[in-house]
Length: 186
Image 1: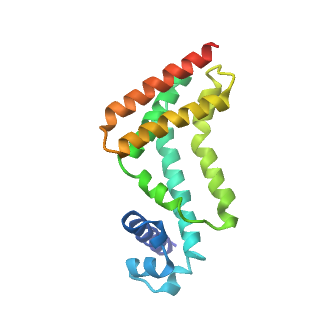
Image 2: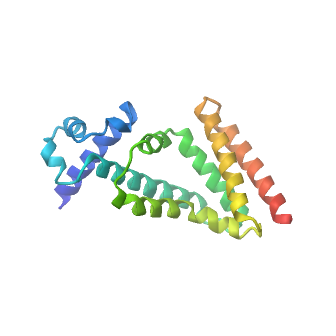
């Protein structure tokens, strides 16, 4: 059993390396097998197709990112503090470059039968943010969420463009929290 999981992780690591160096479109059964030093047929013992492998990569990355965000807000009780910490950690994820894997993987169509599993991963990822938003007293939660999405997207683009991450993260958090506080008063 341990050998099987080790082999699966070896295949996943090869696929990640391909995605990061050549783009997710390069993740084919043949390319992953070659990168991992295995035969093509051995991959089918673990994944039904390259799209199935990409789905596993997406789910694994969603789980990693969800855990990272949960750790960042652990112990916070004030909803605005939770949101601040959540935004800051999300932007640190952009800063460290790991988000490029997700961007690359999102260019590949995953199998239909895996869509719900991936969708569940996305819902788990944003659940703490939704919960914190609901605790703020803001009446238009969808509007507030769209506002936050715009702020974090703009900061992400600025970080990706080479701006120093620390000030971008601080500015995004300051701007977002000021806006949310204003919405909470209405």
